Image (cartoon, rainbow, N blue to C red; front, side):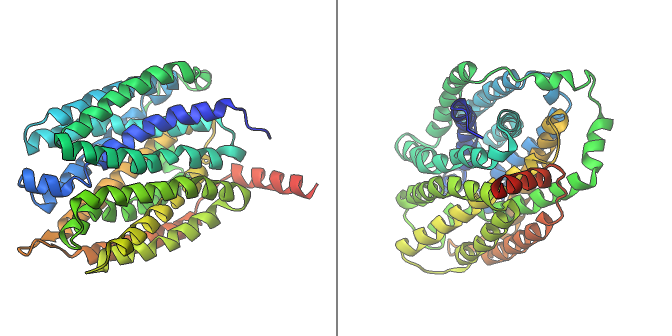
Amino acid sequence: MKKPAIENWYIFALGSFLFAHMVDFMIIMPLGPTFITNLLIDSQQFSWLVSSYTLTAAISGVFGLLWMDRFDRKKALLVVVCCFSLATALCGLANSYHMLLIARMATGIFGGLINAQCLTIISELVPFERRGFAMGKMMMAFSLGSIVGIPSGLMLANTFGWRAPFMAIALFGVLMIILAWYILPPIDAHLKAVPEAINWAEIREIIAEPSHVSCFLFMAALMFSQFCVVPFIGTVLVQNLGVDQAHLPWVYLLGGSATAITGPIIGKLADTYSKPLLFKICALLVMIPIAAITTIQQASLFLILLITTAFFIFMSGRMSPAMALISAQVDARQRGRFLGFNAAVQQAAAGLGSAVAGALVVLGSDGRMHHFSWVGGIAIASGLLSILLVNKLKLSIVPKIEEKKSLEKIA
């Protein structure tokens, strides 16, 4: 089936919102050493700056299920991004740790809805047989966030102070709202099938479905393993391995550049061969750099960049086949609520992973972060659990499509 050219514009528009969401969420992590020094906070308080965003995002995601399918998805997304941009600007205006924490919680409330809305819209606009590739291209927003967003944000922070990145993200969000208004079509076909009143009973029905439970557990294990490690990478590189803070942008620049190349390739391979197989390969390979990052005591900058780049490649590589599989769990009528709750599970698991890591990692009197190897062990165990759980996914639509594709190839 030939891909319509307009799909690239849809991916660009939605990817721009994911880019802003990703940079807003991630910029706090490499700024960890700055916050610890300037705000005089410990590792536990820093972990709450990270997890507060994801936990409030999880809560808003659940309550968003009650109204997500009541409106045109395009209009709902643009309203959410508008509120998100305002909350991000408040982060840049905060003048204390507690004010910043509250602002991060407000940002999380709206940021948590962006991911689910974007995934729902791309699932509506792109058919399943091209969805893995579309997801891979859209997930490039996260790579571009590492290539452009995080390094640029760190440069702004080094030049103008830590408030500057937040103000820049807020401005970018406003500009993308204007652009998306003209690019995205109305997305309201689901309104004909969804009853006007959406209640908790329907949400309980989605949550209680056995195949959905397997999906949620799978995503929780996946995100928990990732966010045990990610929030503290920048801080550990600076505090433990002696990496100059001016070199931190290279970690994200190289890692993002690599995933920008490998992400679409992995997505295409997942469409051509097997999504579960590609997920398992990436999930196993990412354990190697996780073990290295969390245990090495001394290494050259070249080796550090090699390890972190491999970490980004395989960590990102897991997500394209995983999200393509998850998007096929339900039909269009329930997709918004299902992906909304799945996004809430993602955010909650990410927040829990960050909180657990923050409780374990200790900033010693020697200035080093201790017990990070414990975090690595937990992350690997959770990653192994996600590999087991992917076999539990019960997808009714996938076998039919894969069977059809196989017959077409034979013919």
